[in-house]
Image (cartoon, rainbow, N blue to C red; front, top):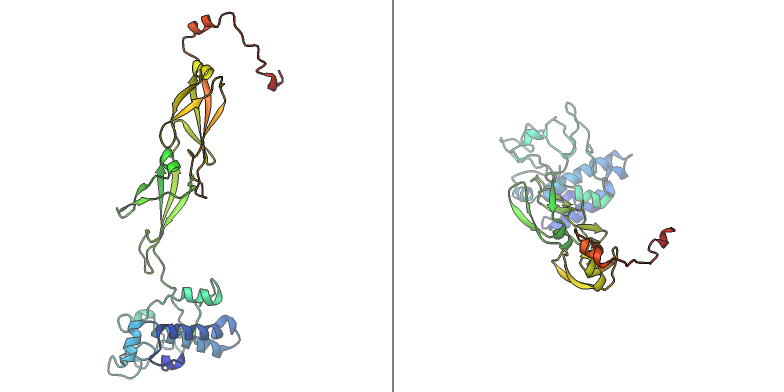
Length: 324
């Protein structure tokens, strides 16, 4: 390979931005997908890519500028030889004329993985990168060399987080213990539901290109007497006969703690009272309500009540709406 600066049409004082810009322009013109019937363009693309690989690596660029390696990344004279240093064998990005493998270069200006994924996605769309292209041809006695896949992030780690019903409704912080033993306080998202999945960036397994993510699935626990209805919370509230007949102020549990509720005189079983803003959070930032359904409970011993009601009956047609 010739001087990588010359290949990219740059001066030695070029900035990282200049190097990337020059490569993007040339790679777009020379990419194999656009020059399927032009072998010379493919060879030129391989040459341009090799130059970019070297100059985009700060350490290798510095070594080249000091004359310690040649334009292909090989030591200039590791064993007193000429360019290449391995009996004249040369290693190219995309070519392998002497049949060298990447392992042959480990520890000696070696071949290493280069992450060009994001760059090619920007140029040719997702999946439009090198796709393991073979640059140059295989020389006599050697097979072509496929570019290594870019380094990957570590694996994602999945967790299940069991959240109490009232905590989910009030979006109370939850403490999570990760696989490495560390803990963090997790803020539940607005509109959280049973099955909501949260992604914590960089909290997964480590990898060459960084950590994966933690995927946390929320499991909302059922409650003894609250039930969820969309963004609302429902509660069946037992009331005594005298509270329903004469009216009363009674204490009612909510997901945010107990409140006083006024029952109007003459309230019957099945009547629904609404407590504003005592339900689950919505994605728009608001909250649902708590719907309280009254259930009149008769005393266990009704002898006194029966005596008081002796001779009285209710003549209302309470089943008229049922057609009977």
